[in-house]
Image (cartoon, rainbow, N blue to C red; front, side, top):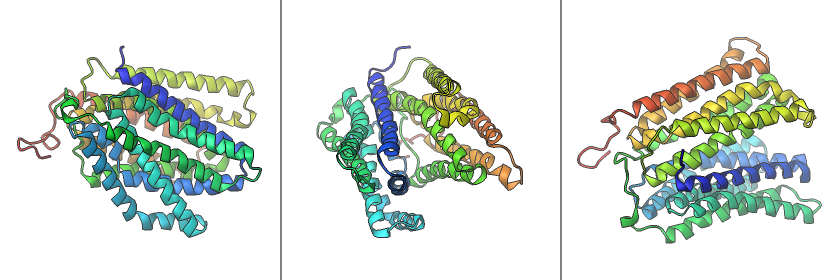
Length: 409
């Protein structure tokens, strides 16, 4: 299978970005005190959810609306995200207050991180739409690398490096990512060089409310997963689940960024089934899981041996996520973006139901049994969603999603 030219560069950039983020986590554990890491994690978590809700999937819309001139699409994404950042300020303040940290300083740092991280997330599709694969790869890889180098150098020079160092390093990395908003925007291709869409219906026809609901459902499910797991099975089991999901979840992220996003940015038709990209990602997920199993079985990671029973259900879940990620561009190319978000919200509801049903019904499954239930349900749901996407997108687009003859949506 011959990949789009930009896919290799974007895949490498995404892999470097994820590796740098993993090394940043290891650096925190080794060079900073638990108190400093805990304070940073609390502020960063508030900033992340603030930023995620404010974006409301603007990066995906920027890619799907490839017919909109790049500078115009970038300006609209920045304007809408900025307005939502301001509107969500009271919610962020409430979350910060619940964390127990000093409100003014913590909220200021969270606001800075949320704003800069949002800029970086918008800069990545801007760089991808520029038509320069190297720009897209660097926009993904360099910001985490800069944050890692700044934090590492500061921790090496200072013996009492604390939370401000971690916050400043993260902010500096995101600020580097925002540079692509200016650099790529100033060299954006002209309208006559915009991609000629092989799919004339390609667009993000979702309303702002639907995109916000989709984002909120994803964020709520991710937060509920760790909170419920910690409450029902304990902090140690929640840590095992979080680490493995973060590790195995890197592969679906790479499949989505290097495959689905590239096809959307180029507005091109792919001759052949996208499921091959999903199969490749699922295979890589299996290889990664087997490598983890070898490390655990040989006692090279004694503190994490309890994670072994989690490997198979989580691997099935993330392998199915690769299949879904490989087809996630199809609804946008066929004018079915609304149905895509509606299915995503329904899937999040199913995951939450499987997550909270046992404790609510008085059942007391072990952590491994609970993981099998969640992993099996997620795998089945994602595969059914993928099959529905492939089958549905072969038919003509729904009238509700397709633009009418007057050009309205």
